[in-house]
Image (spheres, helix red, strand yellow):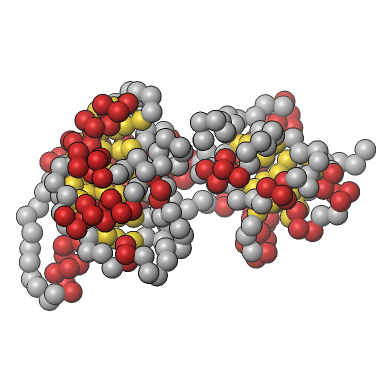
Length: 315
């Protein structure tokens, strides 16, 4: 019987696929890894595991003997939306390096707001020498929406830097030094106490539009927001209105409903908005490939899979 084959299935360019293939092959020298694009029908029948990055669902249907799928991304909302009815288990990427990168970004942009960098940038544009009063980290409370692996690591970095930290999650967590909340009442309480709100939430039916006009109204006047989770968690029109009114003082946005952010989008020109091009925590090809290799080796050896995506929950 012919040996099994791993297929890389993406919507990326050939050059991007080649970069991934080089890292995956280096991490798994004992495996044959090929792009789906170059496989014959007989070769597609040999594929038992697909390594994917936003795959076309029709491409996965070309693999009749597929046992499971390993995503190269941490976020899986697009997979969940597009693979309804898909029966093979899907494993998401859980990379400690991604959590480190995200925690670093949360701390960096929290400092950006704590040190009034938007105000100094405005002063420079206006050629105004305008020192502002210093506010210590210990005088500010950062609220984290999402206390999973990313949120937990971010909380550690913020606490080490001296910030007060609160967190909200679907079910109540217990993290040392963090004031933890859950549920609708807990969300309202955390929104009301946060000086800087950081969203690390995945996109699900429950989180879509979670930060809307009513919730912005629950926040302190002038509170600031960082969104490093998913764009549609925020109601864009509600945020623009809250920025115009001063209810929200500044928003650092790295994720959007449509990416790249269209040139005509008002976020580009709205005072009080910092636009970032989805760079808060990029996937590291080296560490991601090593994790994929480890998961595939464990499955080959004993049949065990890491935690798989819950399509009903959305993550």
